Length: 471
Image 1 (cartoon, helix red, strand yellow):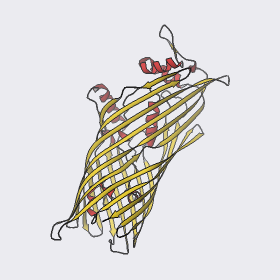
Image 2: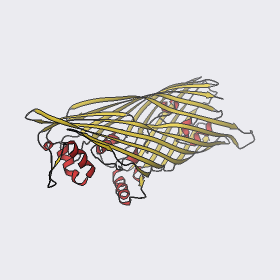
Image 3: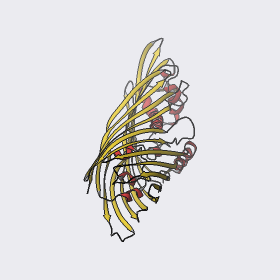
Image 4: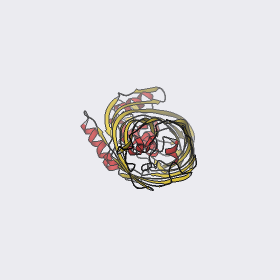
């Protein structure tokens, strides 16, 4: 997902507009690998396994596997490396950050052995679904076309805010006849752009689950996701004439999104035979209320810029459908046991929508763009766990599918994970590592750019630890 965020942030960085963008709903629709260390170690393939507080977000029926109450807390480090390549010129940047994983509690209530519903669980959790932390730097030298010539001069006439920023700063001049001109329309140009993204998507969940006759597990979760996303860009362009620098300007922007939503998740897990579990789940769309702030400034002969009016609007994510299967060998009393689980998830991202009561034209245009830009995507997860007495060894792989119709950007992710754990009578400790990769992204500095495309690749390293208290 980060690749398209770079693309979207790049477009926003070149617009002095506080406006919605058709990629915004994807920020809150596509999830990575995060949460408890046990969940991460199995690459999230817990749809039919359960027994983890993260089941509240994926298949809440998995909470029905609990037979004891548990309190868990997870945290660690999230380190992202980004590489950009323009015509053979490579630039690297990184963003190390603290990673919150989860804080959750499952309360298990055991019924009489004569009751059909053997256990009932009530759980509460605050789970991290996505980190947006990333830094990207792009360097482009010896260009024959300026950003001013390629973009601003084509768009500034119809954009009063851009006109004021660039004219007041002195980058662009306007004569008495209304003719726009700039020295940045000739010469050769060097450009540096830095992009800093930060933020998170968390979900507070309230779940109810049960165990029917030890073969059917049912669960439901009311989810309240909330998140913040900030994208700060700094774009500098230096002009050269006859090999000599004539000066440069800097264009800075900041986009701040804050969203709060609500959704419902329903799931079940069936155990037709002792060694096999089958799971299904459905997630309703998340209905978000969004606050959108935008800032832009130009620094040249003098500074000009400021915050634009705050916008508020709604947007919706798509339905999600999950199916799972798991092979289970042994049980909790076995000295040696293990599981192998497979998860499949389907979501049609073209069903993401904006809802704006006071701007039907903008709403229609954005939703039409979403229909044309996005498609359905498949996510596959496979995870294994081996129990050696009280020790657990885990490994997994996940492929998060590409939600884009065209090949302009690939929003898919590949994750390889591993982990270890210890489960005592009254406590558990788990440690996990996940490596995520997204490659072959394409970055467009601005429209009408006839220079070679800048490609980007992102590598993510996540280290997570979870402490659990059982009672």
